[in-house]
Image 1 (cartoon, rainbow, N blue to C red):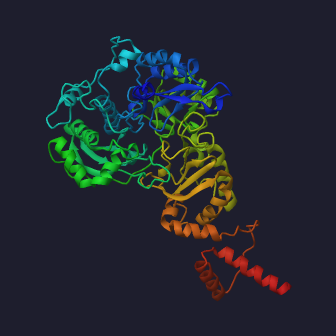
Image 2 (cartoon, helix red, strand yellow; image 1 turned 45 degrees about the vertical axis):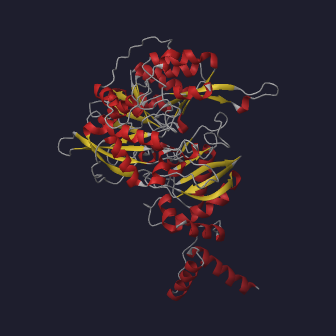
Image 3 (cartoon, rainbow, N blue to C red; image 1 turned 60 degrees about the vertical axis):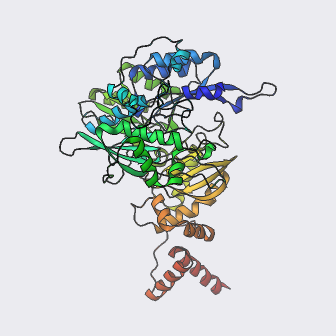
Length: 591
């Protein structure tokens, strides 16, 4: 029971499978995950986490896909020291794991001149407070009941709206007014953004909140609400699936905490508890339909939701590189491969952040943004980071920059194969294939890899997703959109990693020869062409001649039309058909 309970305090017990030894049993340790709404990290907390990783952890810090830290390698005897130090540094791990609301995502904005972005950060913090466990047990355990006063107080409106129970959202007299004694059926994820900014995979959450503002004044007027996203699934269980949010309605600014409570109460009271694989909000909406779900939410809300307001097309932003905060200061987005801060890079980041009193924003793509940089420090910071391998993202391979992977082996108990340690080689092999088939170095697409089907690195949103389904084996998902607004679909099962070249070379060559212009991404191409055609081409693929740059040869129009007809009929390229025809003619003459 204690292993399950500690999850609610933001920690998992893990076993390092590679540290097991004959007669020694399992090598147990703990992973702690922080709560960082919107990814904001104060200067003091950053330095604290860096120290804890060095003194009590594995020596590395992991940036997650939900804008938090994961601290691996903490021993049981050190748990209390680590928890209490985080809390006293104005941090928290409360609710970072377990069947509660998890860390709330928001654009990792460094902008000080955008009211809508600043409001996202405030709202993420306030909803995190609204849905945080209230009993006080967290502080009783890790601070011995010490009354630790933080510099920041909860927004009075959050306190007032949490206590409001006009329509049955609360358990009266309970130390947990929203969660009650049983908490939620499963974890619950919320994201907040502004129209058009999809830097956080906003559509993959249980609840997505879009901040709507007055175009003239920039003041927030209300919120679009979407519900029902989620990535987790189980192999060979068709009743489980990834899905995206669907529009539910719009609420005025003053009603946001009430509608969030109404949605949480609906999931709490009607979400399945008999089967954890079917207990996420997305399955409740799938079972009921959107209209019934909306109607029940409205009962807890106490009134009708307003119609959903139109939104612009989603755009992916990575916040990497240099930019202007809008207050005279600069920000610099640092690409961190797989989110792993380690070695000299970790030391240099700490030195810069400590020396120049910088704050940090963590992104939902495992990177970090250095904020509040004086313009005079630009050259120093750039050169210092490049000296330890943190090159400007524009100097890195776009395939690498866009990729993500979960930690997987050896610590994650659910992993069946590699992800974080496996994706660098996969990226290199994919790039080599792209070069081989003639795709330019400037071309790239979104690659994501997980060691199991739970989807922590959101592989089902990738243009190419590798989902572990056995040792050195992956299910391949294709067709996600580069702006992260369309789900990928399963293309093949059980691809052994040593079969990567024979799997992807036909697809990439087909893409190069049949794409609709340089602007069509690989994911869009796969979605447009369809998987039946992709599989047919893959099966019939004949590698192109090793010598690709040949003198041009003119042919009569009639011959060209015949070649074109054959190519379309046999699903081949013109070059393939012409080469085969010439080879056939030459062999006939020579014989």
